[in-house]
Length: 236
Image (cartoon, rainbow, N blue to C red):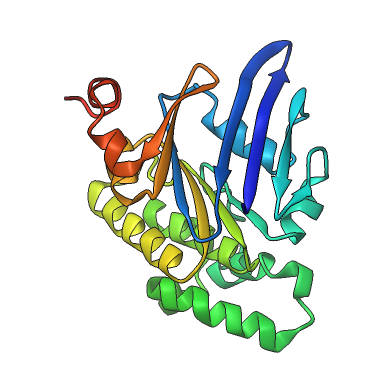
């Protein structure tokens, strides 16, 4: 397995946010975690990335225990996180924001250019306006830049946090298509998403998180047809 999480417990500010959470992502999979706002989904990704202290359990990546490692080292191993809210450098150009993702190998110009070309292939709108400052782009375009920056790190696994948050339906649909294309290119993806319907439609497997626990697991199709999921997350 590419990523394995066993019985993860996270306590922040004296409150237990995640309790006994287990999940896995196999190589080449597109795995989705859905759940209501505030249930611990973003905390999960931040914890995998080394941004939160681990109270219990373990995290394995490519068979190696990464529990407690610093975020910078985890990222260098090929585990990339695209954060909620995009978190770009607003007064840098789109191109410079992407180049930040290539920092670990910045001196290898051919490698940087190869990955930049791939990012532009996936998001041609960025190439067209690569010299514009990031804060002049729309919310949807900024999300594209954020994902493209993640691609520059050559991820084995890309974790994406709340990609559709605050975006128009047409932009959301386009982004989900891109995520599916990236997965088809061989990039494994762990997607945390409130837009349960569209996320489950593209998922190989999915988990439902409620109150800091994983309460359900299955294929995307199985969860789309589950009565509890329909009522709680699909408005049916």
